[in-house]
Length: 295
Image (cartoon, rainbow, N blue to C red; front, side, top):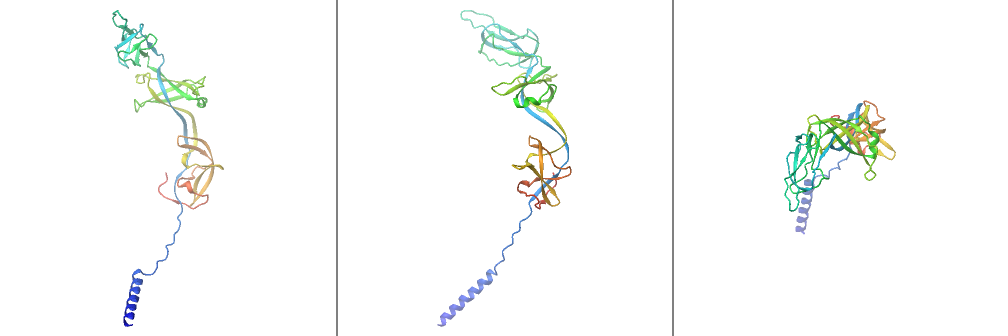
């Protein structure tokens, strides 16, 4: 019996020790939800250019084709692409390739004075009088031919300015003007050919180049321009959030233009504090916390 009380006392002491070691139960930490965090910018009016971008192909104003007078096998070129040649200057040689007969190589001459391009034959290729051996063009002015979708044609007018750039010659640009607006549309591709004339005094643009074409089709003055992502689009209409005091205010807007990641909008007021980040989960009238500098 004595042993029982001894063991009972030991167990009680152990339990008391564990109680003090663990300590009292901690109260559950109260969780509070903070206000949504947002970034903002102040709305102000600006001018905005609506532009369209295309690829275009460079051609001479008057491309002339150097043709062989006889069929045969291509031997060699006597000039390099980009060389300036005079009218009747030899530019290539052709082997007549007649069985049982020998001829001196036939010479292909330039039909006009200009810059040589499109040297696409290799030794041994078959040449016919119908297939151009080279192109010769006056490149002081060039044409840029642009294939535009039929839905875009209505935006273009003769005389519109076009900015031309080339990945081959980075950092340089040329100014051209629309010379011809498509009057017919290819029914297979639903496109028409827009022609732009470009001054090219240093002849750096050559026939066959593929270039980038940027054309301003409209200039909007004193408008609000925002990143397209800040506009929330719903079945009930389009809206943005602005910050009034410490609350988010939902503002119904109209989209005047949208493209290239930008939206021109109306319905807001100059000086409004536009919420530009964090607006995805906002509710009208909800308190918000602004962080970071205004963009």
